[in-house]
Length: 308
Ligand code: AMP
Image (cartoon, rainbow, N blue to C red; front, top):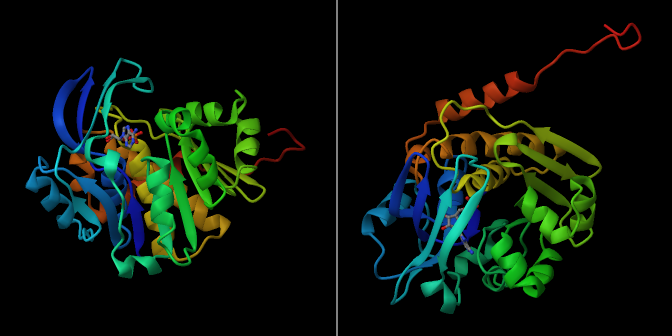
């Protein structure tokens, strides 16, 4: 089944201890769509300005992403810039310029109304709501957001939370949204707002899934070189949702595998700036990393009575 993604398509300026890149292809919808394209057909809803490099559009096209929902508007493309210190889990946003997103009123191509799997990637929650309203009967809707919107648009965010099946966000955002420091309590408080499936991303330490009455914890993949963490969260979400849409099933086993595919894709994303590494991925590389995650967490049963 195909996956509809709405979110930002951006030009990112990023500085890490290892280098700097200006006006790189970024945005939540970009990272998520490219990642999901390894699993299923993707429809992208977003907006770009007249300064957007046609080569970036070609890159998206090369992943067979359906761009009928990508609008081109007069003005400048959404821009974000951030800087990372040696602790790559910590980033400082230097600037967020909404530009063409400020007036974006998404009009979905009519055939998108039948979309069953929907990922509302990080963007203004009012835009996310307007997209959701144009979809007839979605089967599984997941949402991502960030501190910028938790603080800036709390009411629309609360409204949309009542209408989604899943929420993905990082641990500091979960604490901010729930107003409590303990992750288990934060998870319970967030699920009480609507989403029954919750994935809390913990940067290099992995991710935790809360679904039904189960908790599943995926480790972070240990890499010798982490170059730029930008987009890791969106790439995770793209792998997670892309796998679920392809699988067409929402069992606990499928949700757990989706977390591992999301983690695998994200572990590639951080190896380079922008979508550079994920763009060149092969299915064999993804499968090998999936198995490496399995090996990382497999352990045998113990004779607990004997303590051995
Ligand atoms: P991540 O590292 O997965 O949290 O996402 C980074 C991406 O989010 C960058 O490519 C940015 O362009 C995009 N981004 C940053 N701030 C915002 C925002 N307020 N709304 C939408 N997208 C954003």
